[in-house]
Image (cartoon, rainbow, N blue to C red; front, top):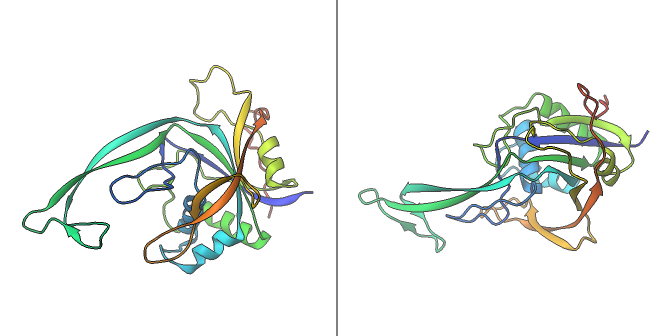
Length: 238
């Protein structure tokens, strides 16, 4: 028996995991952000925006991501009309003469990810129970991005570490019928204090909703093989 880990599957027509989204321009990273995953867990648990428990949850969990399918990038140009805040602290427009801005918003189309979370067993079990019966609807980064399968893959003690789970957990074809064959390797991003890359996505509860940096290690693992048809790859633990 290995270490208890919480596994999530994130699939949907659109996902968006902003790293530098400020004001009009809303970006997306190439894989789920930690702030986005903690926010997703917060929705399941019923933690509102700004709740200090979100920052506590961020500190308790270590995250790894495997890119099952990178998807393609989509940029949607939306318009916003009204009395709009600006960076200086003032506003643009008025009730009688509202302002209109164009807001480019980036998404990942048809992407799929395996997320592995490590932390205290009690916290992982509580998160798994909440994902199975969420307090509020779950979404993949933005409220318009609805998952097409249950987010909860399961709790498992089949692996000794996040790294082993990312390397060995079966790959899932999901809805990717357009692929003629599976990839030879899969990209992984693992939270690591000695990592060489930085992600500005650690939750810090503050009025400006600014985030702290997190270091990660980026690499690749060999294709792990497919899950047997009709079977999930995670072992349920109670």
